[in-house]
Length: 112
Length: 114
Image (cartoon, rainbow over all chains, first blue to last red; front, top):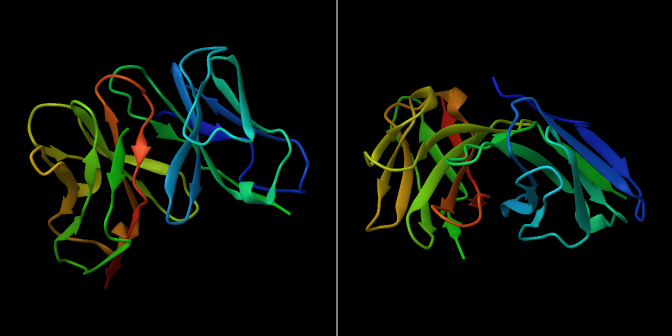
């Protein structure tokens, strides 16, 4: 079974802090994705990566950056956390081609 | 741009009755279509997908979905609902070519009453 793990299930940070969310997948997938989930809005794509050191902006990249130094690991960085970044963050990975995406359990981030 | 509409925030159905969760999409060219389910405090789990071929797709836990190109719909169905099917369901789409990332709908909460 594909396993996607995220470093924390729950995280509480203060406004202005730098926040790192880590995601690791164990299936040698080329593609990795970061989404945020908010009630009534579904999942919105923040960033994705096709390969190591490759990244592309999604639909809502403002206030976020990413890093992919190794194929299995994709990090989401909030350079200066703000209260409007309080959300559930979901990481996913998938192969090329028909791209079934496999999701991690999510990190619920609260910014105070 | 691609988009997904799930017109119902919540669907209520009695256990044993058939259920339908609606999804319509907009995409340039041929679509890849997906359904995912999310149980409380969990990530999304893949249910089924349509790539090409038979318009009726069967997936996990007895779910199926029907692709209708003329109506640009991909409704999720199950002949007999279970209380354990109660969860949040997401429809997603991507185009055959172009960006590999999925575009998700806003989600539909399914509540199955005993």
